[in-house]
Length: 481
Ligand code: NAD
Image (cartoon, rainbow, N blue to C red; front, side, top):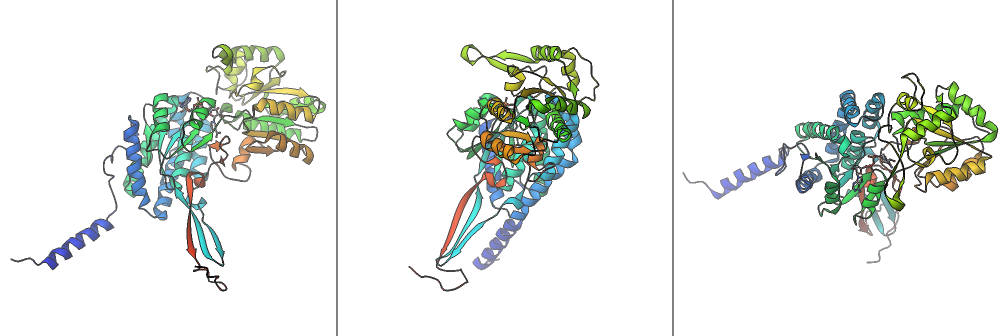
């Protein structure tokens, strides 16, 4: 039987069109790994494959991907939050669970993307927000899977894929989350490895990500060392660095509200939040009333010798020579108030959320980003001294500062002096992330590089598309070409 060329062409074209219509179910090389890698080169290659597949998909598919990540984060928050608590051994279980649920619900997604248009005599210019490509993300132990989840939502909503180097003490829960996300995404969308993770992370693997030619952008969330390393990487970096948020309380404040706010913010997850209230400066005229308000709101006040005992146990010296400095002891960082109280020689109920006490300015709890549910209170003669002390305690990180006041001039002065990315008035720190206040949520707040509370737009590049002299449908064009 003779087969005509025309028949062959028609069969081939039919097969090709069916292949094109079929969902893409496999990346070329790494499908079935569910994002888990031991080698940085392989992780970056898999994330690149996934990026190329994602780039061929619609915005509707992207929305569906974000929806799947949200659903897992919300519906599995108890199991994954419990895993995070068991692995990291810092913070509070109820908040580990809540953080995953809240991030799943409230991290901005694809709806946050927008285009801008310039329309005029010479036609139209449309500015769109395109992905960078593969992003290298470094995440902290204080919120291992939550930071990864928030980063994944923002970065994928922007059209990117990511390779994560988690903190070694939170690597298992991070890898478990990545596996669950990718398994569901492969099943539902047909793309694996949208989120890749280094299962055994080290400083070397972090540095390999920083230097890798296949990584288009870096986002680090962590303390001073990793912030410096990212800034020196030579790559475009979004740096969510450390803070030491001070609180000022002046004589016009609603002291009961201030006390409730400080307890809520400073005790959350045992003070692991980078935005959490870390030290409080209260003007002398209301200092004693403020201490009474804290007790009335449920915090436990330590006496001076108890504060001394806690400081001796919980603050240690690290580093050598001129780099020697105070630091929180790992035995107390993120531990419950009852554990800290015991070290202070005091027995308190397991339900106690926060300890506090009067200290002088030399106490290391003021200067160190301590991440413990004990907050030092310092008496200052007036609000100006409070603002000055707050400025010193914040070390110029320009991260977060808080005031309780009804004096607009004092609020304005503090905003100007502190120059912080987040400045909260009359509420707990988390209200600045849309949790009880206005705005939106992210666990990567980029102060040093200036992006602020990160969103999908943070992880995009602007591209401009210009139509010259046409497509503006109003009036007469000024034809110059
Ligand atoms: P960390 O700095 O010890 O570690 C953060 C991450 O960086 C980890 O994955 C760690 O392995 C890695 N890392 C540390 N040093 C590095 C180096 N030299 N090179 C490459 N990688 C390095 O911090 P942590 O204890 O995990 O987290 C708490 C810190 O993170 C606090 O300082 C807190 O303020 C900060 N933080 C900031 C934000 C923010 O949005 N700005 C959010 C959460 C936490």
